[in-house]
Image (cartoon, rainbow, N blue to C red; front, side, top):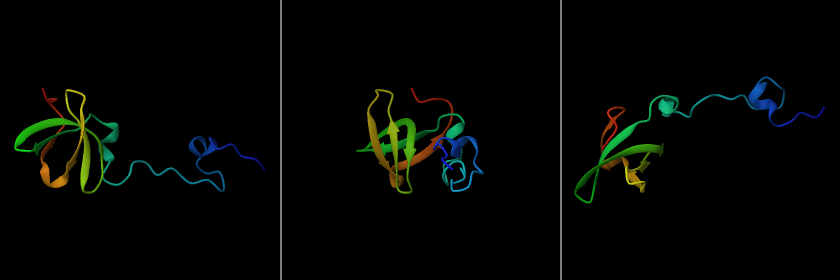
Length: 85
């Protein structure tokens, strides 16, 4: 029997299809408010919105639109509001 690929998201119990398990570990905040981070870069304190993160680093977007990779050792604080200005 042919089963379209989109059935895995609509009908997770279709045999031969993987069940969707939700957010990856440590990423439970994805569907909530955007998270922000205060970090140190070259002696300057900067803040931005977290776009994605891994175990040792995070991809952060600054207010200027620039995206930077921030190591976990340089992240000082995480917060959800107020948004950085």
